[in-house]
Image 1 (cartoon, helix red, strand yellow):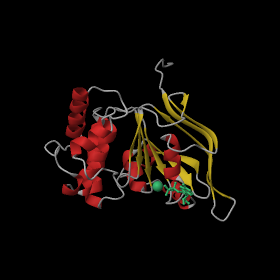
Image 2 (cartoon, protein in one colour):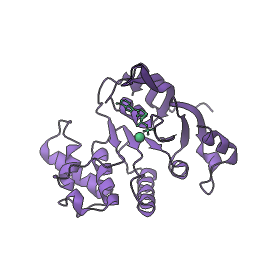
Image 3 (cartoon, rainbow, N blue to C red):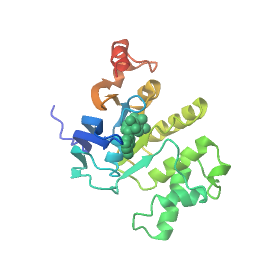
Image 4 (cartoon, helix red, strand yellow):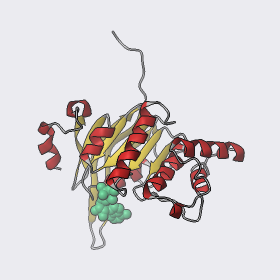
Length: 252
Ligand code: ADP
Ligand code: MG
């Protein structure tokens, strides 16, 4: 039976290339011919080695840098600067140490024209969502790494973005903390409590990608490019990668 349900394309990357000038002359091609699409309702993993260009690609998606070639579209429109509906979570949290939890989270709303009392209400909601109620007046240095990253998530979620870009958000945390944070986020997502449409998770951790993502895009190095897609349902149960994809992962 034909379905009339329209699934929205949130992000479309077509033939994206990025080259940086080398100090010694010439250029370094970091990304070459990157293609990928992200649809509403998906958590997609971008799995690749360090230095393969994952953060560069995320920065292009976030409108922070321009590609040398190719197209990047968000909800059908070309990305030509930071877009209102895209939020990012960073590996090193990127909090302002001189601001409280509440102030750090409210900063996420600064670019939006929201009345102060509404901004305050939304910040409190986001803080509550990530399990930090009671810590509104704390400063980052008073928090553990896991709690700091919860603030990072609250600052991204407070804008209710259509697209959440996560750049190795768990890799600066110890194994146990990372595990708790991943599970909490997945619970929020599966309960429909995350005010977002889709997530792109950049990671170099296979187990994490298999646990969290609906599909995994395998990203090569030198140059960075999406070379294969791994459907995650094949890799389940027990969060193990299907052996037939093992060599592919080893080859990137
Ligand atoms: P990843 O996030 O996968 O670890 P990055 O995107 O951070 O990879 O970096 C990919 C490559 O691009 C690296 O070799 C890095 O040195 C280079 N690179 C990133 N940003 C710049 C820049 N602004 N100028 C020159 N080279 C850069
Ligand atoms: Mg990176």
